[in-house]
Length: 172
Image (tube, rainbow, N blue to C red; front, side, top):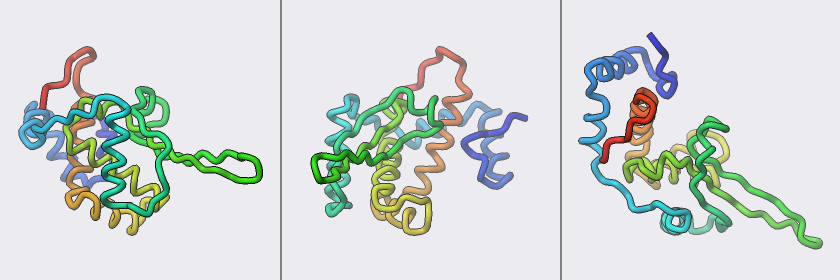
């Protein structure tokens, strides 16, 4: 029995239910029925506008974003689905900070709710560095169903990992 790497922290009974869905080849169909809406955020400029709109709606006082983009190497190199960084540069006598959010390119073709979940997660890191209670409160403020979306995203990633190489992702 191979481990479910995206579901490692979940109780054994939850993992058993997921294994049963996989064995019955129902995991993909279940998620496709639940998350039918695709998004039109394909390019980095569109992603920047999407993230900026969420930031303006929920985090008006947060510092401005310098760059937002899809990163094709992110999942492979950092074992992350998104990153947030602050880059400090000295300009004369002043220290200037630029904030970046990078989203794994797997979200370019993922359902709209999963893109929103990862963007909310990275925006929350702008205010809370650690995954603590305040961090998750901020996530649920921006996306009330955040915890369900995170779990379903883990199921989605598990399904992607189990697909044969070269197989195309089913349309949502």
